Length: 530
View 1: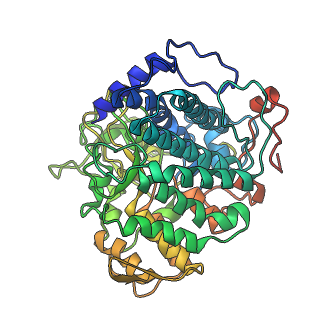
View 2: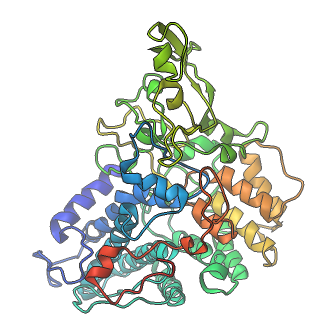
View 3: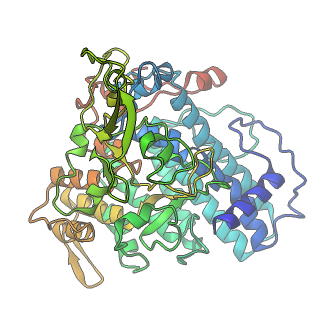
């Protein structure tokens, strides 16, 4: 499946050239409306760049903007290592500026996707009419809407660009206009998107991907445009639930495993990865402790840099909940039950050691500590002795892949929309004022829907649910799936204190328009506060 997607992507890159965020780029291509595209394979090949663009940055830089800015994830410095100019510290502490490299890179990524979609649409709209062409145009419009959703969510007021090759510099559009554009594009695409679910449509938009994106759009409408649209969110969610095309996967861990893919009937839409062919997922590289390399049979040494915060980990407190097992904490053991041992010295274990034998060789069983203890507050540095390296609970949700490439890429696809999220979004929309609705012969109250998710996780069933407990459930169910920032902003909690952050500036709900973009285009209006 993934090799097929890769084949289409390579062919499309050869045919169309690479993505670029410049609006006046020349197209170096032999394609003309008279000779391309004609067959389904040609259409599939031509759309490849937009999917490779999505996967290229989704799992690392985009993920960092959505998770490192919250209470769910952190990359502290280690005796100067992993400071990288302070970029991770700035995200955690909400002190980023207009020249932050990730803020700039994701703007370029998002508009690179939009520009690629516009270029593909220009070719498709001039090609001879066919049913494949009509569906392909709808898919590209849905993907363009997805990239615009990301840009609107991150940056607020952004330019709306719908043509390729126009040299006129675009002006910033109000967020409400961008919202309306996303809505209208998805509504226009829906009639021509397929209802087919499975390998043939995996990683590409179908009707249910559009419904899921609309559910997310409408759930956030009160924040985005000041207009509650919770009833509309329920309607979109019901289109997915009532279709019976998706089910909660009994084995929660399999949703995120290295061999996940179209066989996971819960996933509605995913960013597709292959360790050798479609690169970009490096969760194990960042999240795994280096001493666990042998246990998980990983073909590279992990960086041991990424972890969660103690309070967030504290939400994983339901007895029997399988989601608790996606985190590593406490003393670590190999699969045969033997302890994971690190050979070091007293001083190597703890640089604060002041006893009589600093250089004495010792064997220390790896113990991962939930707490994060700073040695240097200003640089958010936790030190780099063996004990300090064990601070912070690590995630194995995107399970370590023994077939990872030596350049540290893995095969796990990353779900963007899945049924559990849709169920929880419906819960929230009802709690915020929408009426409960029936689906598949069942009146789906918030408690019934929540307990579907709880039951799959083998967690105790809830007896009541409100918005506060729902947010905790979303934290457990969707941990590290790049939705935490979106959730906290919608709840009005993005300004709260957590970890080493005490900045409560509300303008940080939006990232700045990068300085480089405004220098190239003076028509772009900077967001307030920057």
